[in-house]
Image (cartoon, rainbow, N blue to C red; front, side):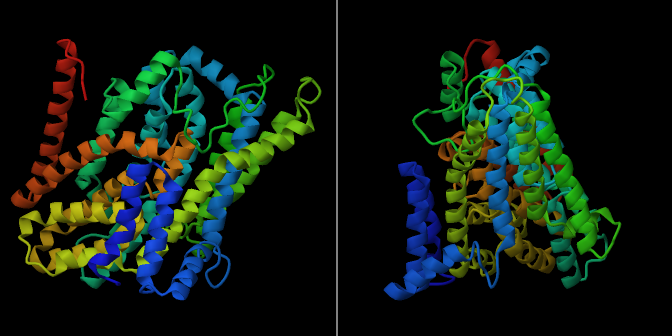
Length: 523
């Protein structure tokens, strides 16, 4: 069943079930079971063993899988930090402080978008840290959690994929190095190429433009309109009938002894310790190199996140403990409750992430990505449509596998091989189209780890986040696809970029004029 059309069945089954049933674990479980049966050709014993291996490998792969374990521990620790910040009254104090300075709903949305751009070192860290900082502010201005998740998700990966000083940038620059060596490309270094490719990533440009337009206006599409209407009219920021990972509102009594520093100090320590350890581990693992890009290429992100989470948790506890003498309600019983509540709040995200990893492992075993790649390599394709075709194919691969990095690893070298044999001048645009497609597919996929992280950071149901973000992602993708088609047909990056910018201006202008004329946006 490997490397055949049947390899598409498990991811498609999981995604279709998610969209129909809204039950993520059930849908992922169905995908995992079908994948195990296909890998082992429906052997009962073999399929059970494959199921066991798919979950075991997330924790043990010839030894402890410390990468995954550190990520899971970091998520749990962030739940603990959130619980202590809420218990100490830090969230309330910060929200009250922010309301006096950020007095409009627009300001709270713009702040979130800017934070997503500023905190760019890693998508996991971005998603969870921005959520912790921005949530009290957006909550106070009745911005729905779904919109908060959209802002988080649509500024994390899009910034990471064009920033050379990030975990993504380091990975991609190293990938470009291998590709350039293979094809004897000497016109530019991998770093120069990566920076040059940034304005060629039309999906990122369209996504960021729409994010800021949405933050400035009320550009609400489809499901997002329903969430925003409920938040505005009732003050209910998320569907109370659904599980919202990372949310623990109402679990602790009101605390008037909290201070702004009770929230800011743990978050600042999280940022500082993470960055410091990323530099330190990168420096150590690179053999003492002082090259910033070499450091980020070798840095240990999960370990850095884990230690930072541990430091922030201890600091958040100490800040609450100092209230024991002045706050009559502060005591150790609430400390244990905070630990328990913080961990419990993150368990849904942990379970979904583990299930997603298991499905990703089985999809790799089925060679789903390799099958999709053959669609391109085995057909005679006109050079003019190669950029847009690879954009669409990579998007579908990332959507089906839930992995943008896996899609990078498969289609970057394939795209390079195809275009180097036909028109080497389009090498960088084609590689940029692959990066753009991977981020788009990742944005749409309910089994993507970054999708899960963004929903967790915002405190909203994963499926609600997927359904509300989807129209924005598809809009950006259509604009990007038109840009890549124009680029391929004209051979000009500039004309493709002008096309993208022109469509965005027309879109924003049409929506603005329709609102001014009294015709409210109905979609």
